Image (cartoon, rainbow, N blue to C red; front, side, top):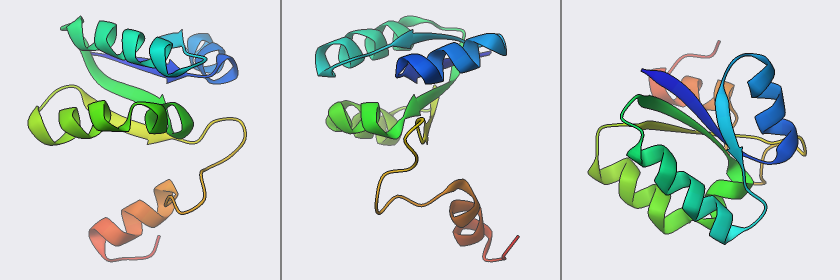
Length: 101
């Protein structure tokens, strides 16, 4: 099982330096195309996707998140920070386990 990343150029290049393969998407059409390519890769177990890119293909993301087991999809902030109204990782963990860390 491997990680994959889908997002803006800075995010993909940054994760690439850590050995994570990915795709740079600059619009909805590219995001949809590359997301579907990642889904076809049976080794892709965890997909990191920037929040802004995920918003461009929200119906596709939501369908996969609630209909299939793999890959696990994690939305992450991009270089511009998290989207307004989105919980940060710390807040998500606090909500999930009911404890503040």
